[in-house]
Length: 164
Image 1: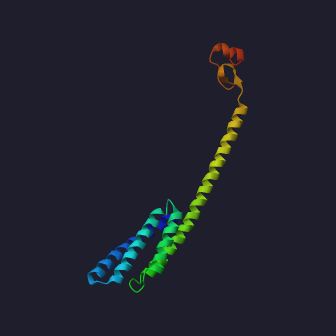
Image 2: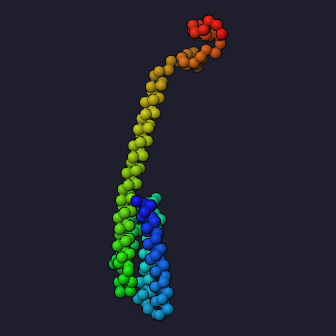
Image 3: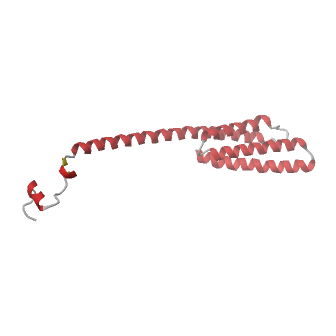
């Protein structure tokens, strides 16, 4: 989900930025100030959406905020008389913000599952250590009961071997 938000967000934000530069260049050439202001705000929406796209995988909470701000600017602030497509881009930004929200919840769920698995592994390790410690019987000189004797004399004393 977060990867899809990242890819779609990058493509849409780059489209908005390119269109914004194009509209600004044309409006500047013909002296239309309203179009130039709409293009500048459109460029800002594109940059904010690009930041939100970049943050969608690592920090989905911030991505939700960026897409929300970009969608608000696109739907409310930019005058639709000068850039009517911005309504569509605003809705796309809000949809991406919603998808980033679900990606945020998915990431939280994955982190909780990892923490629970880590706790289960630590509990198994602790139980295994206790079990192994209970089964071992220490022999003098730091050897364990299941160790083989080092010399023939030790083997005879333990009654394991009469000959080598």
